Image 1 (spheres, one colour):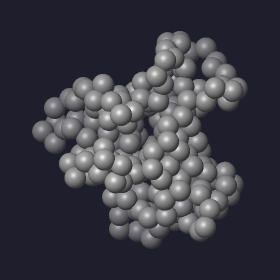
Image 2 (tube, rainbow, N blue to C red; image 1 turned 30 degrees about the horizontal axis):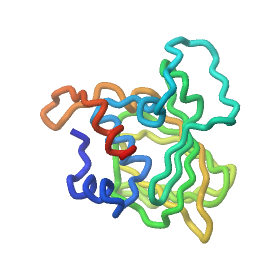
Image 3 (cartoon, helix red, strand yellow; image 1 turned 90 degrees about the vertical axis):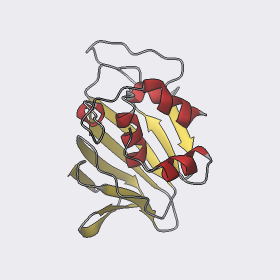
Image 4 (cartoon, one colour; image 1 turned 60 degrees about the vertical axis):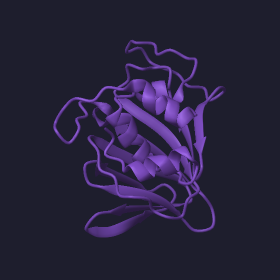
Length: 182
């Protein structure tokens, strides 16, 4: 359902591999899990288009081996963008992942390397940004002795209308949540 190899999912479940943001995105897409559901245990979305303020006093976060994810404005499930601050500790690329949607990345601290299929990797330093079509398979890693901290913004279509290899719609929201929060 996720287009992520079974062996990769097993490694993630057994803490032998840390999933990249791209892998988590593919899993959420494959299982039709909205980001707020995955990263938010007790809060419920506002369900409206009113402004959502996130004062950072009670951040919604998830730590996995190799990365920390902080979901911004998680209370607004009606939002059209998925915004996350990612602190990436891993200095190795995982499998290249392509998925629906578009992404915007802004490096806050450190150096980020974005690798693509059939093109040279791109390195971004503090205050540099990248806009990409998420269908182009890609992977992230930190470069240098310190973790990289960056803002990642994906549009809602990253999680919409996900289909399996036979073009069948996929819907299994609770599975990924249990996988990641296990």
